[in-house]
Length: 467
Ligand SMILES: Nc1ncnc2c1ncn2[C@@H]1O[C@H](COP(=O)(O)OP(=O)(O)OP(=O)(O)O)[C@@H](O)[C@H]1O
Ligand SMILES: [Mg+2]
Image 1 (cartoon, protein in one colour):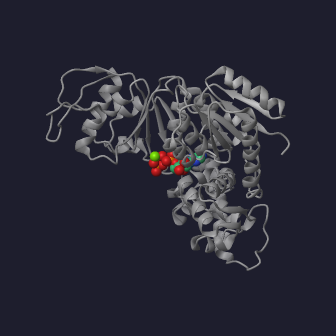
Image 2: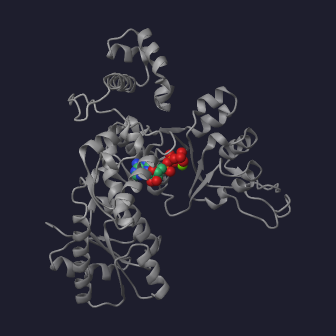
Image 3: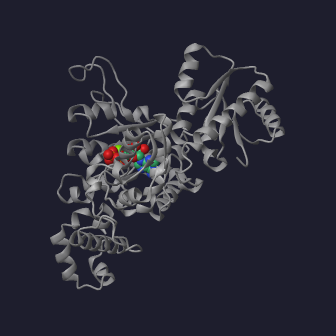
């Protein structure tokens, strides 16, 4: 390893500086963070192989920090220390993924020994997946991955809007990462130290949703045995994430609209208005404009919610992100399941890159987990993929028009080639069929006929359809 990077996380400046000086002397490149939050913000930029952290820190305790760090970057080795530890705490730490725990005060020679053991462990585990392409730091944004133009534009937008209090509406198919985007907005905002409270309108029965959102007073309905705070109040000072907003019934939409307008709410059974200070982030996988047209969603609420619209493209419209996701997920599940998959060969990678992923990133993540667990070690190849991939005849690539070893079905290959070019033209023209027809040197009517015959219109994304 050319350069060993270590980060020390402690709110106590003098400990931070002593450790830092000592390790720099031993030729480590040392970075400092004054607490867990600060460390998470610096992690992708500094890219340490090892993190040393105190457990008692303001804003975010050490255990929570380790969990979040490991979720983001499971390969980083963590050494934790504290003056107040007991057996259960040590067990929790190890469960959260810490490599070693030291009681404070500790000798610097003990620290040095554990750092060098930790680095050795890092090298061993990373040699287990050397063949997995390295993901460069620019492909990470908060807890998200992506380096396609479309995702980079979304990351930029998130950064721009995070600090304002403007309401955000995130739209995208299921599994595209809407919740991750909502969390990234909260984590980058000035509200990050307050709660991020998600609530899913589809998962809560209609009759309970109002009380879940706004709270209720004792005795306001059967079963209301005590006053209860709603999610809006739990999110006070922070952000509320109204997931699957398209599922909310019209009656409740009216109440929500009033809260959005007045920033005041009335718990069920109370006549007292309460002021709230909450940033609202909503999400849906439905086309809200269509619901508005069908009178199933209030138009005024739609406009209130979509002050800043963010449309996450489906995975098939950002295929260049697929290899990055695959690498990251192999790494993640190798560590989580103690497996040693070294990588994936090109025929298998090609197949995964040409598949349409109706379940988007979630479907890809689940598939990689399944492949890592079932195969356990070695390199994932075409034969390891589930049957639906085996039957795909997708081996025609623009730049590689060679006949595959086992031959192919010419008619399906040609038809699939045609589909892909049509979809690409539609993506390029943002769904504008006239422009797409020009790109393909076809008459518009011929393109429309083909779309109908091949049933391709259903595969277009929310963004392309609404364009
Ligand atoms: N850019 C990304 N980087 C890393 N992981 C991602 C990304 N996008 C999605 N995922 C992963 O895919 C899964 C689905 O993401 P998420 O729950 O945010 O999607 P969603 O759009 O809210 O889906 P749904 O509409 O079904 O609720 C999660 O496991 C998430 O970690
Ligand atoms: Mg979701």
